[in-house]
Image (cartoon, rainbow, N blue to C red):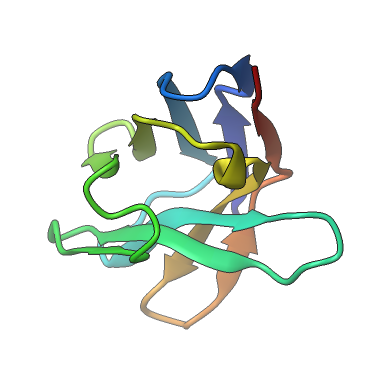
Amino acid sequence: QVQLVESGRGLVQPGGSLRLSCAVSRSIFRLYTMGWYRQAPGKQHDLVATITNGGGTKYADSVKGRFTISLDNAKMTVYLQMNSLKPEDTAVYLCYFRNVWDGNDYWGQGTQVTVSS
């Protein structure tokens, strides 16, 4: 069983920064992918960034160069450093975890990020 615990919600002014974190509880894995999706009201989840246990990363074009994803393997925690935030970044950000061994996906509860003056 897997549970994801997110933190870092906040209200940020345009151009500001925010750091999100997501920790995996109740399980330990060797091969996995973690990352962040975001969802605006009435829209589907969109990929923001992912990282594998081996360190490979992927970013959405809309955030490349502004966001950085990182992983602390020992703590099983993924971080998303968001810089130069724009109002268009406003969304509920959802952490996810994929167990590579069985292909199962798990989602966090979501954390609200609002970028506004």
